Picture 1 (cartoon, one colour):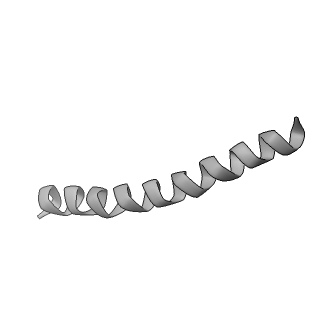
Picture 2: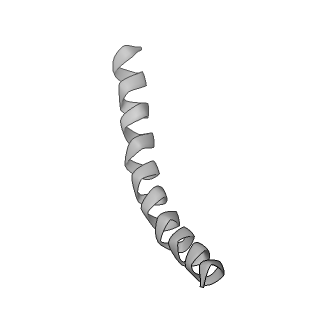
Length: 36
């Protein structure tokens, strides 16, 4: 059960990370523009 559970969690984490990374990148870009 560990084998199927591990990939299942990874799949759920993948979209979550992408969703978090997208806004994070935008915030970082905005922060850099503000600093510049």
